[in-house]
Length: 572
Image 1 (cartoon, rainbow, N blue to C red):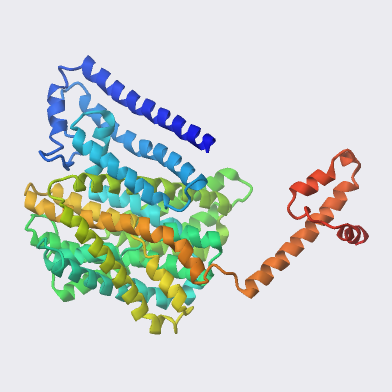
Image 2 (image 1 turned 30 degrees about the vertical axis):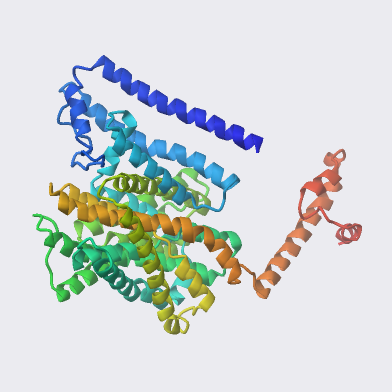
């Protein structure tokens, strides 16, 4: 405990030093160039309105009052500091959570810390480097947000999925990902339309519903791997999340377009009939899948040409090729072809694993890089979502009653999730890999909301903020993001920590007799191999002075070796 306290105290001193250095550098810069920055201070202060809310701007920096001698470029450079400060904080948080408090999900803590960052940047009215950087990131362009974050977050999960199990349970996953997402969207929209007092239109409620339909299995997947959960449960949770992310994004563009069109903002949204809406949905989904398949074939050719397992540099090039194809497939599908970039990325990853998995020279390097990228992006997007949520909840427009409606929404969202999963249980228990009521119950509870939902809500809020000056219209999407961010926070903080005990209570963490037998046979085989090598080393003259009792003590397979086992190993 004393070592822990000493470590935390050192971390605190380090953070104080960094923050003080950043503020000191900014103060020195303002002292040296006070005349040139008089107008700049007014421009930066305009990012916050009278009640302290972070304001969105199209340029993200508020450069109207800058001089012509390069201060504009200095403020754009400040955008670099926020993500790396967040990563530094994330390293400390991850260390503490893995050593001392391993119950709380990492993403939940980053979201909470982001809340405090957003509240501080909103209330300070200061022009220090970190506050300016936070404001720039809060006002990030929606298209950039989609293009930077979604491919990196989705491709790794698609690349690691078990294609054999996926092909068997594909009809289950398609049912969960499309009809069930639409049903969940409509039921959640009914809550927003009839329960909330905000006067939301039906199209806004549908947009709200499809945003909350996207699930995030990051915390749950790590838990399933840790306890050795059944492969069927893992493929159901990861596969459902991948596909319903794609369908939720497509529904978002359909319903979000109708919502933006009814706002009357020129250049945003489109009006369409029900038939046109379904046509758009199938065009985006089918077109995205086709483009993803084409990019998967191209990636297979590239990986084949670079499949030289003794050349480390070509292993690195293979990783670079997967990153390039993942982001290009998203851009071509989303921006060039007007289809679903999310479905394109997911399709590319799945078929790359199926057709080119054997061509990857070093899966350890590939997995390590994509794990790193996923961690970096998750850290930034959850902290960014928390910053926007923190800026919203300190505004006078966010009242105490809104917290009550948020908890009511959480209850309804949980009930809807259980109703949809158990309502389809008679079908899903008979097709594909089938399922049990225990797995269905866990899947219902483990449907956390996370990165994709936060990204969609943040993008919608920024779309509206950068397109209109009408505060009443801006308030619609700001309140919507507040509810989405609140649900993400509640599911991460309440559902996430309880997944482990629930998994054990339902008996899903218990190994089957077949699994226990396989593990036992593997351990016995490894034990015999290690024992043979141990006997061989004991008879080698080079190791005559080695204390083999100490070696045996530190080797788990040899720690309990008996004299009879040693004699048998020698005679064999």
